[in-house]
Image (cartoon, rainbow, N blue to C red; front, top):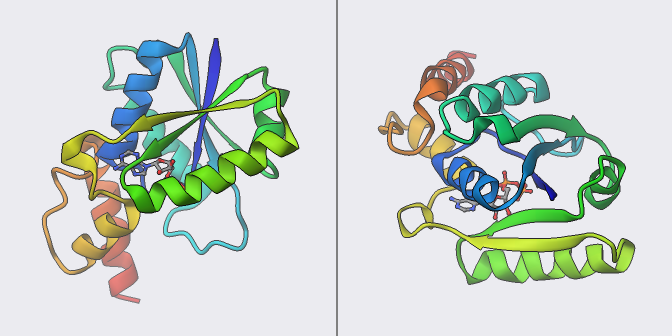
Length: 165
Ligand code: ADP
């Protein structure tokens, strides 16, 4: 069975990568989907995020079951279009749950053929988000434990570029 893991991934964190790996242990195929949302101001372009996710996935044992793509529009429609019946989301805390519950219920209304599947964050990653990573790195904190090692330099380089602007 094919599953889609949609998100912004700006940038990918170890929390995201853990969800991807665990999903690939359950499903035959996992497609990481970058939502193209022109209303969101992102640090990395979609192309950069695809490349960073690909580099990180390559370190996983089950990498051959995972792919990356980007898409515009409703995620349920993209999922259906590529033959996926399931969407994966991660839950870190009750605050995530409230938002995810509303989104999953709306998606159920829009397209009842797609099920949302939740994986809870590993305890070591419950605090971890893309914005936390950006905030820590921007203030010269150490993000080595928070982002996959193949993309560490990409993240640090971009934040340095931004600071000198
Ligand atoms: P979005 O803008 O769609 O929330 P994100 O890239 O922030 O995109 O997150 C994508 C998904 O991954 C969401 O379901 C989010 O709850 C989940 N997620 C984010 N960080 C973690 C983490 N540290 N552990 C587990 N799941 C996470």
